[in-house]
Image (cartoon, rainbow, N blue to C red; front, side, top):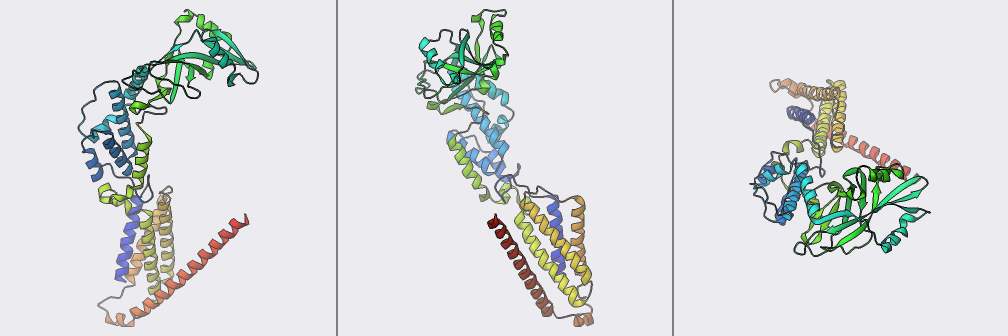
Length: 445
């Protein structure tokens, strides 16, 4: 029983350590994220900055493989800022390595917003179309906006109201010029979605996007039939006229581009200004990142700095539970053979094994439901109590009479094998009955 006692004691310490350092996973199952100070992350941070897009893609994919979501986002923001600076003809700051780029990518939202606005201002310009061609207006009047008996009323040059049931839906004609010159790009801007605000007031915004294909090549100016957003902030049909006439002439009013809500792409340069964030992301980059995510387990836990955490994952806890159950069964069989403390060994073995299995189930659910303190202490007390009981059942080596009076080891082992086989068979029968019941319920539905 000395070996069994040592095994139980080591497993008790393992269970206790697993309660202090649970394994929480944020990526692929059984592969925890790399530690921030792991050898793999230190090596990646010290790597010189790549000089091409392929190298940047590799760094981004490695960050995903190590499951460093925040660092990957920071590196993507830095790549986006660098691409926009190069498009604007500005110099990039001198950085030593990937770690410096990661630090530069953190908290640069204001810089990205300014760069985004500068890129859009270099590519497109917007203005109100006050002299809309009659043929174009007829096409808009016959469009889908005029269904269900709506009427298009001109409020002021460049602004119309579609009135129905006391509801006013506003439209505006906006001229958009492609400022890109031929050396920059020779293909149309696509996709394109612009949001403009009247006199810079965000509650009077318009959404302008083409319906169908438009050959929007460099140097051209195209008229967009822009849709109001949130009714342009007006409640009555007379309010726009009063607003346009208040303090200034009609020609003084203008539309301004809302950079944060607008998006476009320059296909020749593989440059895009996307909505919903500034991440420098392409389908190819997303594909590489997804492949890297599935290769997360290729690095050893020593490289990722996660060996201590991986010790307490679901697989490790289930193996420890199985070893504990077999050792606890040995203590019960020995106590029954010696006719000593059998009534104490059985509840200790059942309680400790049940809690060990429950802990393994919790680890399988990403430790979403950790044990409360009282249950953890009670479980560890039963574990150490069973180890102490196993030690009390050992045969003193100095007492040869006690050694001769004990059952032989082969007899105890035979009883243990019989008990293990019996419990295993009962478990298979119970599990099989449960599985049949589940199948019956499913087919009955």
